[in-house]
Amino acid sequence: MKFCSQCGNPVSQLIPQGDNRLRYVCGHCEFIHYQNPNIVAGCLPVWGDRILLCRRAIEPRRGYWTLPAGFMENGETLEQAAARETDEEACARVRQLALYTLFDLPHISQVHVFFRAELADLDFAVGEESLEVRLFAQHEVPWAELAFPTVSRTLECYFADRQGHDYPVRNEYLPPLHGLAQT
Image (spheres, rainbow, N blue to C red):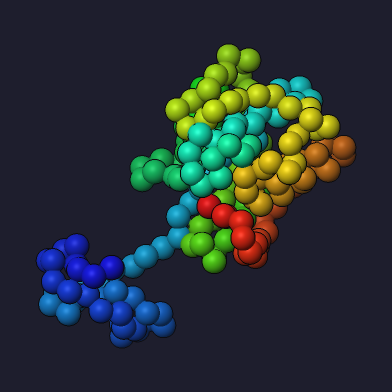
């Protein structure tokens, strides 16, 4: 950041009084520009013993498989964001959303949140951000072609938890993986 969004004057990094972190602060109007993590919300859509995955049509990780997810918008709840992203990427409607996994990714200033959800029907299709949308049984999941560590970990947890029909909410820190985009 170089200029203040309030008055257009230059900003500099300093620790404001009463704070403990570097922030961008306007030298003219003294406005403090806080930068906070982005929230990625998505669903693990289930139909019977299969899960719905989308092959990404956009970067990062174009061509790799993922759960439908994306950045939360202002004015919506986590659950609304997850359902909206599922509709946008897979033209799929979900119901009975249950909070399932939360991943802290401070190295990219993001939090990823996934809900377990039931597909309302089998009327799904390729959305604008997807190349392909498909249901997978556990043995069919393209593990080596999954786009992000949070997706892999959510699926690992789901298939393990499914055996005991117990789905605890999980909150985990995932460290950076060298050479792999994490967003």
